[in-house]
Image 1 (cartoon, rainbow, N blue to C red):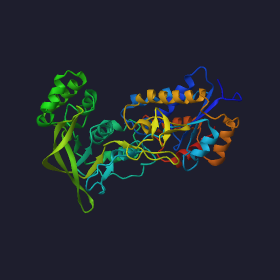
Image 2 (cartoon, rainbow, N blue to C red; image 1 turned 30 degrees about the vertical axis):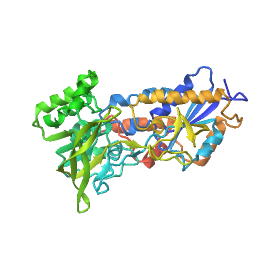
Image 3 (cartoon, rainbow, N blue to C red; image 1 turned 60 degrees about the horizontal axis):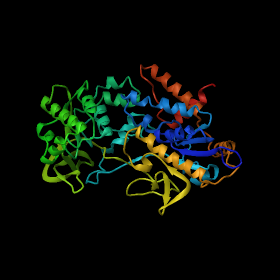
Image 4 (tube, rainbow, N blue to C red; image 1 turned 180 degrees about the vertical axis):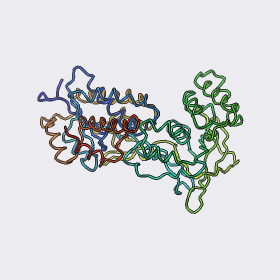
Length: 463
């Protein structure tokens, strides 16, 4: 099936992370449809948070890019890297040249704690630290002072666990991964001995898995430290434990087993604190000097959930840096409706809404669609749902047919607007160059951490 005039359905996907590639995959799977997908990314490198967010010592997770490479190898696919929506191209530019535009822009900002002292020097979003050690161009030049003996990480989710592990692990273990060389060098000079992970709720509400706990507890250079007091169950959590949820029971049992081990004898410690909330970042001479935390009690809500409530008991932890990991948050896209409270693009099953009505030909996938939740694989079903709506609108004639919307016309327009466009073939050359650079120092790869360096490398490589 084709558009009127016999040409393929033309779809632009903005963003090359997992949700964008899964959307392209879903569109290509329909055997009755002739479809072409052009994917745009503001960076010259694809794969989004798989490249820039997954921890360097989690290479198995990063292997998912092999799935995306299969999609990129399809002759119906084009990649336009180093092209930013809102700067190089407008949304209207795309809508004039494609039948449908799918926004896969993720959630590029972070949530704030909303407490006094949050803006002191030495207070960062954990995502900045992650981007820094992962060679992300946005964060490559940030400076993190690792001279303090103690650091606080607010949150106990996946990102918080990764950050705590990186701060506490032996740098020589990380030196063999694809972590940025400058980050490895900084970690080698680090004086951090105590990493405090601060979780608002108790062991029965912790979202991580026993496997993640074992990983934290198995570090070469650090002990995972919990206290029997903070891993004990309150009466309401005990009811949930007794109800028989096996995942919950395994988590609680693992946490309590670690608490019984005591402080250990390794040089560094990861202190996992439960039922505590930061209420103030305390400064000295304009810099982070301590964090004041309040002990929480857990209260059953009318909807059955358990939420923390301050108890009025406080404690102060001397620290030199604090990294907040309390959630990602979306940023507005020029020309696209945005829900500033939820940090998402308003939509109905992937169709973008304006004043409650669908905008023809405009769709959204991933975290920009549903908020920052789920793992990498969660995006597959999310993207398939949106792709189904694209096909439904196509078959229902809701997408305008225009014979001028061709691959050649789009290619000419994009390259006329932006000189240094990076194709997927270009990316494969960058990929090979990164791997080769890494081999020289015994690493998996050494990433280009500046866009200018990546573009210069492409010009230097003889095809």
